[in-house]
Picture 1 (spheres, rainbow, N blue to C red):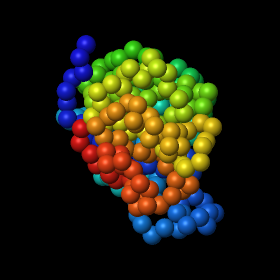
Picture 2: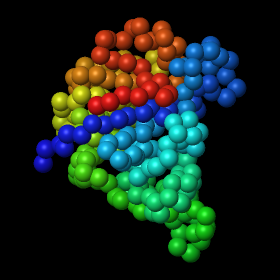
Picture 3: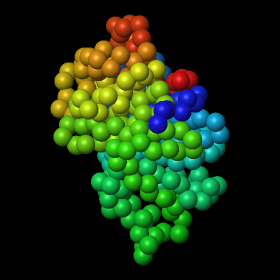
Picture 4: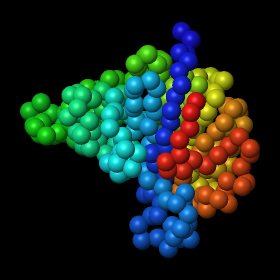
Length: 260
């Protein structure tokens, strides 16, 4: 089935790595920068079409991100994987659950099992806390599915040796914590308007693309535009790195809004 063409509005809620920038107890010059684009909360995006809004991941900074962007309604969350910087704000979904009741969350089986252990008071029928958010898990595998009229294509990528889930929404794809992608899964990334992908730092890393790997990936996938996210202070200053990038490649920053 062809992708449904819808205008997507994307807000970068956070563009930092797991420790954010500034990092606690760091005297690195980037952590001390006065440029607001060098201040990065944990990575997540808000994606909206029509009257619907979803986040990809629910970071440790979720509450702060929702307040900063004045988000008053949310229809669900797409989770990439179970690491703390991507799930830590789960409890703060309760504010939206007060409005809509149960909140759909889309995730693979391994991520769901991890959430059930770490947030037992949300998922356990026996021990569920009365004030906990009410969520409806929707298991995601590799098959496309529709959400509110939009086709969503899951993409298996590898975070080191850990298989995690990236997502394609119409002509935009969001890949975070990626180190490798199979040739078969790359086929799902053809003809993109926008590719959002991690670029952690200059030096190589065992579980994330570094800057050169991210640039090579963009060159291979050939989107019209690419935005780098999940950035650590070891990538360098936003203003300096931005000058070194190709004309169609940009460093994302917290609060950046784009339309696809």
